[in-house]
Image (spheres, rainbow, N blue to C red):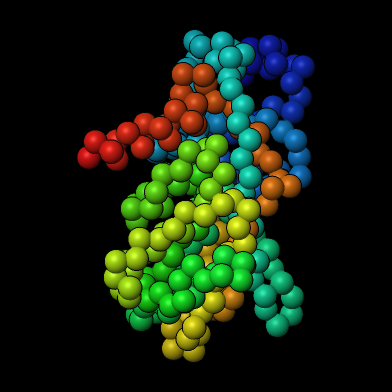
Length: 234
């Protein structure tokens, strides 16, 4: 670390994040109002958002690292007291809270995406998060520069064949619980859960930009592209 600091003394806004994807998400949110550069070093399991550590090449990797900017989703839930807002870098998950499936409607602005969806829930995912939980529920993998977000059902029961939808990242998604007394739902922004949600508003907060650094040979764009190719060949 001494060697790294000596070579990067001019980059005082550089933040090393050593851990896994969860710790990276947590660190980004804590620094949402700062213009830092974040370089992740994986010491967790999968580490999709992280770089692989190389003691011999760390200085060279940092000097050649490519920066990408990502914006998070903003989830707003109205309660009796006030509106609460939460950020989600990967996805917002709407999940059934009891043994019964959720019954929800989904709008994009004033237009219905679907008037009634009975399912275990639904995911609203960013391009950066489209290879996480979204991919596990067979949602589409989005390129970082696609300017899209994904709406993917979780175990859709009615309509059984509904596969979700890809919409513009300028969309304003409104999810309403159609039967909150009998079929309660939770809204989860990455790992922050709000129970008994009734109306959830979701949009991309373009005012917030997170600056992530990736090794040139393993950029986030390349990782996403590899996942796309794997899906096409499976």
